[in-house]
Amino acid sequence: MDTAEELTILQNEVKSLRAELESLRIELKAGRSQVKLTMRGQCRCPACGHTTIVHSTEVWDGHIRGGKWALRQNGRVFDDRRGLVQAYVCMGCGLIEWYADTSTIDTNNDQFRVIEADRSGTGGPYRGG
Ligand SMILES: [Zn+2]
Figure 1: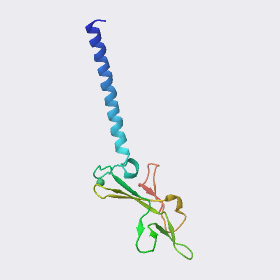
Figure 2: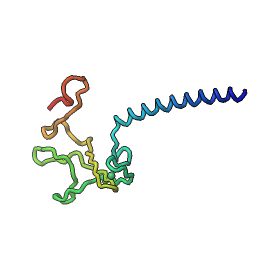
Figure 3: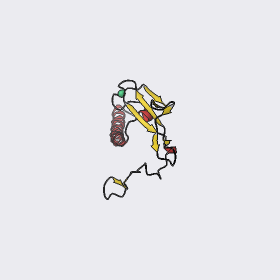
Figure 4: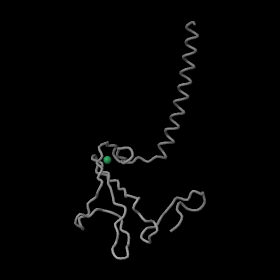
């Protein structure tokens, strides 16, 4: 193989790699536009990019002794606490991300209104309610 042949092979390889790189750029751009950055999911603050995040599995409610933040659900005798709240706090800027334990939430309750995205393509972004 002479130098001219080697040069042609390398040029074709570079051309192929550039095409693959462009394809990956397009794929990355599309992926970034659909996935929102969360502190829980990526351990990176969406506001400032800091990567030191504190996860608090309980959020204290100062109004009740030993109380924890939760969603309130009306009960027959006593109100019930459902969906205990957890928080992710960015140590860079203080942004807080809240999450509730959805496994304990009873959606068949007047206290809560379930909102789902309309995937049919007609109407507004929500249905129900
Ligand atoms: Zn931050």
